[in-house]
Image 1 (cartoon, rainbow over the protein chains, first blue to last red):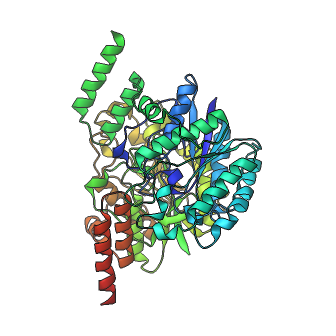
Image 2: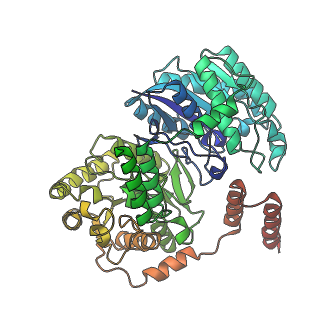
Image 3: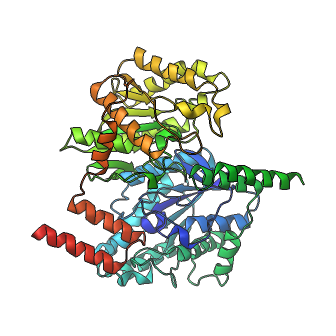
Length: 285
Length: 285
């Protein structure tokens, strides 16, 4: 049975890291929900905008796999860029979509956790004061609707970089949102907070870059695995990212990658055939 | 009110044309459903696989806009690569997802048509003989579930190139499927068939290329607009594609494009600021 995780929140959960900045993570045992069915995960996972890229879920899943060698994990991408807590209100379009997707996934998996990253769009105009209470209602509703009252809920902090950069003057209350998130993790059962300390942004000063998203995913897994808040980043997070990204592909995965390159027009038919023969020959020898 | 269109079928409805082969279509009045809400359309619209690219829906929407200057159109992407009619069976994951998405869209739009392209995965092993009857059940169920008993259903033919190329020997019955699709359009109310004659494939001999998808969208619109089957491609389809692709961007669209380039790291902050000043200056003058 696949262990599935619901991805909700705004752009930094969807992922805006540049694809070309990190090695891809490709593992047949890591799935993502597409149109109600599992597909092998490829990045971007959560294609909410044309700017979607690397998020934290891929390295989270990679780290989960290091700890669950013979099992499968499935990601349910429902994050939406720029969304506020009001956009996530119970019964709203984002909430209803995420509930539908998670219910569809539950028919073919065990829902094992909820991954949340959100708050930039509640970091101004006094919104941070209501953050805890609004989130409380939303998390309760997800757990209730999905019939998983004790499912772990993991949230990460907003980036320290938010007060600088092009959009810096918008996020006057991001520290208050971080406090609300930490308080939420401390006071609610099975809720954990993950620090964003030391993580860096793209040139926009708004979105975690790809390298940072890889680390963030390790931290999210640490929280999930140990069932505790992560205030200090794991010492070995860089090493874990390398192990996950450098995992050797199986022959089937190599073939799938070649087929994708061919379908994209990045590999000629002759080259495809030649590569496939090499793989098949090595399998037989 | 937005006029919305449901996109269902397999990879050639999702789109596999290469993005770099055509000019993009970007128009604030063309929307796509993302997580239950409308966003301005960007391509790929139907991101069912990492290979998703140009499909027919964008130029369909562009042509619709030429005929509806002051109105908005919304696309509901639910096509899934490699899916057979059995995968689309009533109550299955793809069907249920498409119904959910279309119902979500109906809350914020008028469902005006269903765009279908499918059949490659029913072109072998005797499957073509059951094509008409299976499709009949599926179309009835969509119309019934969505409470749009007379909504136009538009389908396109499979490519003439299918019997050649790398996967050519799989599709022994694609002509029979095309016949079934034509018969379906002829015998069912408000159903129209669109020829794929003259359209070409990517190097895989399987997926319509980007230029052909642009033309196909024009033909789909012709069928929708005239409420009739399109056996002869419109004489001016190339001209229409050019008009749609060359439509001048509004200042707001230019700004949105710049913001996307910046978010992707393709434009520096300095260049962004400079471009924005130019647009704002021209607006004031």
